[in-house]
Length: 356
Image (cartoon, rainbow, N blue to C red):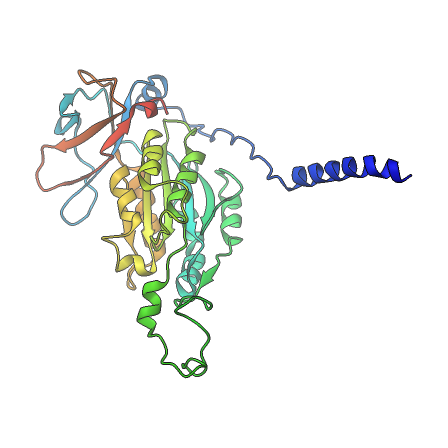
């Protein structure tokens, strides 16, 4: 009996361990079904669908007051690739349906988190019947939701069930500069470390770069005749190399490689740090835009402005001519003849991303 147990026990243990690993493994997500687009494709969207060689540029044009400029014609635009002017093969002002990942910051200060959570319902009100959305959250990790849906009732239910974690504005106890205190003084009688000093040594732990990369992976196979966007609601804080597997440059390449634009609503400290935080960097690089929620502005209004802007961009497309096709990426510039206007579009594309 002892001999039998000697040989059988290891086999039983290995079988149990394998079964445990199998049960603990994450369930692979099923490929998302194509979005319902029952409306007949316009000529412009049909050309974009069929011709994989087209470089597609969503373009937003604003006046000095920040208002959208909707009345420009094809002959008022110029497109240059690597400094060589290109012929515009497709031009349209029609509103494209949106495929968007709603990426919600799961590590905001308590007051900001509550404000965001209370406002999420309003995102559904900005969507059309042909739009689709995928709700995700991020903190140190990327948390995908249930998948793309165009069913606004299902999306509303999912947003209402999205419970955001939060933290106080003070570094958590236990760090070398933030030990236990009694009535604001250290137990050993030494002078307390000032709050400003503790804040300096508090390091952000959010993986925003990884979250944007994960969102791009979800969007990359959506049809190219739709507008693909990552819609971020965040304070823009990022944890850097220690908490991100993907660098900013790698993430931007992934986003641009699949014709995705990043739009953001900055909350909390993002309003004060807007010249330095990640939201503006991603928006600038990908031809998106970012709005910041000051006290006098409501989040609901900003959600509406972003979806309106993303849906109603100009769409310019061209087949590259007289440029070096062997290059890994190409610089792109869009100009308009009318003076005093601001143009938002991606500033380059990667050759592997034309067909996406």
